[in-house]
Length: 546
Image 1: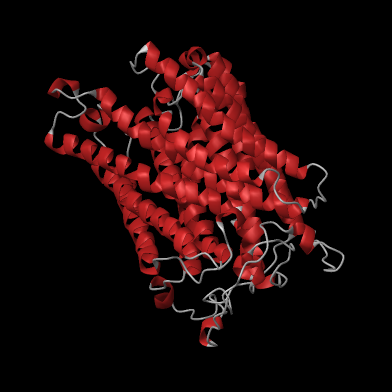
Image 2: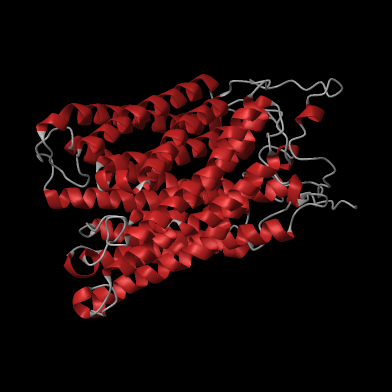
């Protein structure tokens, strides 16, 4: 296969090509667009974190003495909307997926570069409507927009917030479509499906969910706005509508959306474990197919959110059984990651420490999800802090930890600079300990009967709430540290070189940061994925970075 030589102009580092604001705002370079997403979601993460800290400060004492009940409703609603729609859903696919998918498959860019840029602008426009709703009185419906409250009774900015969610959904659809087409059409010669990195398999599965599931949410949100504005009888029983219809439509998207956030993180974990164990992932085919299985099964379990909403006992039993099945492909990944680490030549670098934190937190989140899938337990803990703790162990404990693991692993590739390793390890420790101190007490609170969404509670729950608030303070420091030392590394970090971790994969075979068009020559793949036995062979003389 002939290789394609790129011109000298195309070899220019994407960071140094042109520093002007115009060049960034009009770029079609997937790497720059990934960094635009990174800057955007960082701002929204900080905003959502501020709402979270206000919530925890309110719950420090039993009496509702910091904010009024209506304000508290707005705080937890805006925290959820910002964190889910403006941070968690776009975090890994739009940032690391955007940056790495073309590099990992040997392509010069995503298949539709202009659509990729448009997706970021659409995301910003949608975020603008949500920010408008926040700044002009807030939103108090909960991030789920449950009817009939959202359509009839709430006197807050439901329509503008719903419009923002509707618009950002198109950004998600375009990103997913771009990744699917790129993986199908732009793989390097020789890069067969069974040679793809597990990161690509995970993003491919998540992209299928984005493309198939997000339109359902968009339609549902439009119906909420129409009923609120024009009093159509869609969800309001007084007008001939069906309140349960909203929950069916909303959770048909929103449960698979969990895997939009979780699956790409699982791909990150597979890459890092393989690198720092110096082994091909155990059961590569099973891990790859488990991503597809999760995407498929994720569409079949939505009604486990509705056991107390009025569905029949038989329906509840069927959805309970289907939910148990979802745990199987997730367990396949955890067992195979563990088997990959077994007898591996392990290097305890900071990305791997974040992986260990991820596995611990994800297992707690996953196992408590099985508890909630059991109808009898769910009836007891529905709408208590048990559900809040479970949700955060999966969404924050797992997804955000995986995102941080990926940022530590690929930051040298993104910037060409190394961060301070000791500070990164301290950050990982603070995140793990702070997170558990924040949310594990909430399992106990929920089991004891403390309902969520209340700004006041009985005094006997105060000790556990104080522990939770103290943990949130530690967690906040753990999250802020990477922002500081990543920024520090841009100026003072050591040069990383093309492959500081001696990792397998095409993205490590180009310069750090990569050239504008990624590769000086189109690569031709003649080896199997994760060929660490070849990389670490004595003839290669490869030294593993620590």
